[in-house]
Image 1 (cartoon, rainbow, N blue to C red):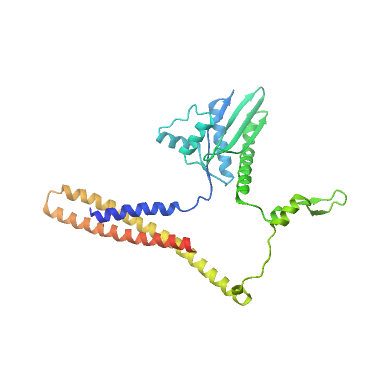
Image 2 (spheres, rainbow, N blue to C red):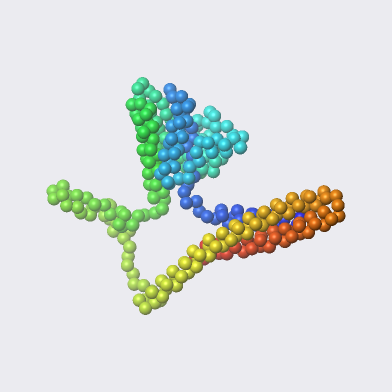
Length: 305
């Protein structure tokens, strides 16, 4: 196998991994860990955790690692989560799973009442983002209400994310109140109104180069550039991925033929196999270069447009 082809293909694989890692995660990753139990069977607990995990997935806010995926990953890492009931251990599991958030909690039965408490934790900071709890007359009522527990946790996450993103606009901040005397709706007064006034957008005249005669031209140029980026980015990544696949396939096929070449017993077979190895070395090298060009084009267009 040509050493240059080996190095090029390996470099391509590493480069492709780095390229696709630059895409931001549109949703944070979350997993629901086993809850602590009190007068509840482990089977019931696992069913409740599984249903809660599905309810969180239905919110379409998080990418969810379900219980099966979680246990499979931990098994591959030779890590047992049995007896892991304290938050330090649970946060460690979250980090092993590369989950940004974990849900932990307790479920139990006291007399004729069923209780559940769920807490949303951020794995990196160990901060509690929010919690939700409920008390029910039977387990069926608890199951029917798990989507509300999930929704409550989702709302707490969105509220925290909203706080981190900055001050809301005046339209979002303004609050409407009804006058108790007339029933008419009016803008809120006091701190809320003051905040809205302070955060309102100040209108300024456009710069000289964006006066009315030039504005339409600038908008057209911006739209054209954006359209170029929208076209070049997927074309670059798709062509890079296709060429990369062909290159890797050629690399694997050439490696297999090279092994046959080293064990061939006749000169004719050796010559034929050597020619085939050289051919697929060339294909692997050329498609690897094409893939690199495609991926670089995609990255550049992604950054510039």
